[in-house]
Length: 161
Image 1: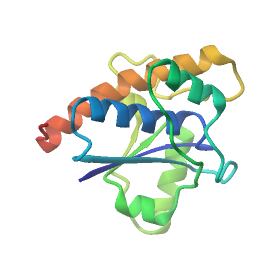
Image 2 (image 1 turned 30 degrees about the vertical axis):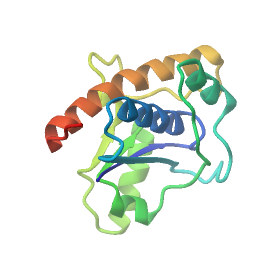
Image 3 (image 1 turned 135 degrees about the vertical axis):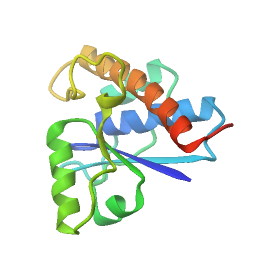
């Protein structure tokens, strides 16, 4: 099983939405038996909390349900996940710092928008302090990037339904 972890700062906006979109797309491709995903944050701000209502509403608008509680990145995550996908450069730096603490290679870490065709930036913007439009923008970014990411995963791992 290929394990994918999506990481943002607080684990209530971007990363749980990415996890839900990934799971939805994998289910539609009948590949849920090949992949496992989760999400977490680099901070401890929202441990145990439900995702931001605006993330949940954005997902629901597209027929996706988010089922997650906020949690913080830990040693087991960096040991166990095959792909660690950060939403922005700051998150990536925090992940690398934790991996270096345990003398672990950080070649499994990627920025989410590395996978988005013609991305205008390498970061997924944090919509937390904005309005619903920002959450819809993040949804569109994640949806496009995850579609391309799944295509790459299927090729790389020779995964078929």
